[in-house]
Length: 246
Image 1 (cartoon, rainbow, N blue to C red):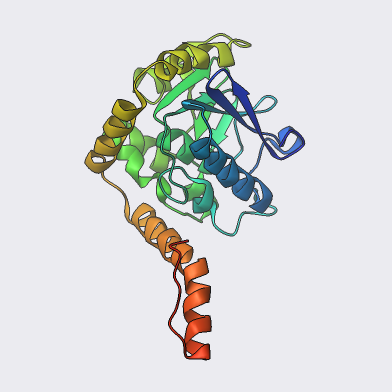
Image 2 (spheres, one colour):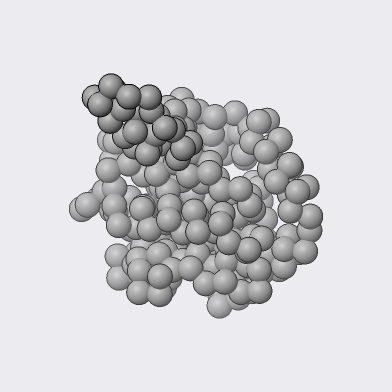
């Protein structure tokens, strides 16, 4: 995946997943969305215990590509379009806009350098996917509403103060800061980590758009499955289907 719009590097049990479209501020189009989904699937199947999600160049991501947005951003959102079974750490430099902020909120931890800026401008643009709604369950309600309704960017220091960011680093030290957590998590019990993440997922409320996207993705997996093809073929051929569960 080294030449992909999303790259995957394994460092001694830690996956570094990088949005790799720096000339476009790592804006998310269809190629990026599906490549990121595939990277998360690869992470699930790997021996890596924890992943760091970051962006190449100066920015984390400018969010959905206005000139060529993804058909469905939800496909690459952890816990929504793709199940991610192991811990995720967002490592943010520069802008994390729109869908980029959604990615950050769905990660377990976030490290940001002093250039980080978090912005959700959908109300200024007049369109919304509204997956940001559950941010109000992750940081103080009034702060979440300030971000969503006033459309004012917040910097790394304020994001740290309100609990959106766990740790701040100096410029150029971002991955080092993320690895501080990643190496601690890597050496913990995978069973306990998975258990705690599942229980926390049950505690955190989900917004309507998030719930709808989860249902949509689950239905799509069944609709596009080998079992669906086999069922239709068996019906047409008037035989008993041989389902594989895939």
